[in-house]
Image 1: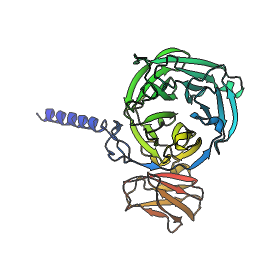
Image 2: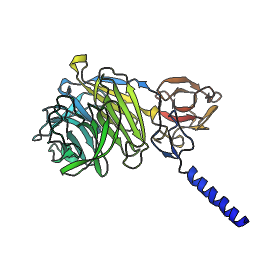
Image 3: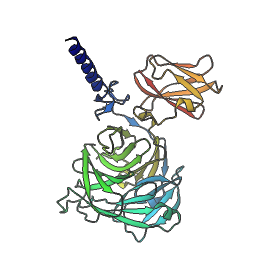
Image 4: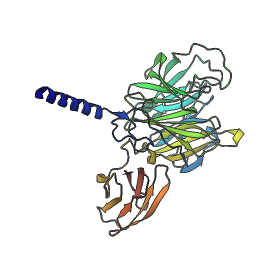
Amino acid sequence: MKLRKSIFIVLSYIIYLGQLYSQTGCTDVLANNYDPLAVQNDGSCTYDPVNIEVNNTYILDPVVEETSGLIYWDDKLWTHNDNADTNLYALNPEDGSIIGNISLFPQTNTDWEEISQDDGYVYVGDFGNNTQGNRHDLKIIRILKSSILNREPIMDLINFEYEDQIDFSPQGPNNTDFDCEALIVTEDNIYLFTKEWVSHKTRLYKLPKVPGTYSAQLLDSYQIDGLVTGAVYNKEINLIVLSGYSTLLQPFVELLYDYPDANFLQGNKRKINVNLPFHQVEGISSKDGLDYYLTNEKFARSGTIQQLHTLDLSVFLGGSLEILPIEDSSRFAIYPNPTDTLLEIKDINKLFPVKYKLLDNSSRMVSEGILTSKENSIDFSNYPKGFYILKLGEKNKDTYKVIKK
């Protein structure tokens, strides 16, 4: 009997450990419902609404007043218009000025709505479908990157229809859920995020990334409560950021991360409103996964002209993403982290005194001051638990993520 009891206790303990280390829940420390025992994200995280400001805004040349997609490549931003014009335009990331262009003729532009890339190719999505919702000629133009640099574009086509679209009768302007303005390209496939004028959802479809004619496979859907207009994918940190706007032209970005495999809508989903009222945001890109570029097209009814904006999302990306500089590769050491009282800052390279800024997860300043060899700590005792950004130095050269327990 003692042996059976011992075996039962051991088996019960093993089962308990298995349940403990396979517990699902919200794994993001920035969320309202963060579960410290969860080891697998189940997509249940919730967040307080937040509005953020852009860092800079630049007026774009009228030649790109219908800017509709954006990538960062070859140290330039690349954009295009969404009707008739068959040029790609290279922009200076510092001020949005046009510094070059290349024609994709003899390709035509029925409704170019997105541009994306992988290591070898640029992809332009001619799949805008909001006029009547009944296009049969949806396609993605694939251009060899090296041929763009040689100014002799080598192009082919990926043609498709949606596997679940059976009604091709005219629906009238802006009255279809089979519109699309966002795509990403992974190692193996193209993924589309729809712009749904009726349901205000987005659906996720998959396509091969090689030339041919395909039926786009429906994978998932999500009630995003808005109109999705762009997407950027960072494969190094498995992060997707969507851009879009509400029916009242309130721009937003939606962060998708900590998802299993290519189930992009099954992980964390966090919407962040951007304080650009009545701006029709169309393109989004990033060079590092922290700082982002947004473009909006001209919208005559609101008096909004075409613009390029810069946006810092770093404070929202520290809960589940390890993408900020780490302490042992920089000039300071910070400890303990996480902390519930004092955060100590050690000056490795004897740089004190040094200015510091502490920001919360809404980019709001929490505190600022000067650290010295005698005053080298920050008191977190009265701060709410969550995620913070500590910036050190005159130009915020050293950046750390700090978690308050």
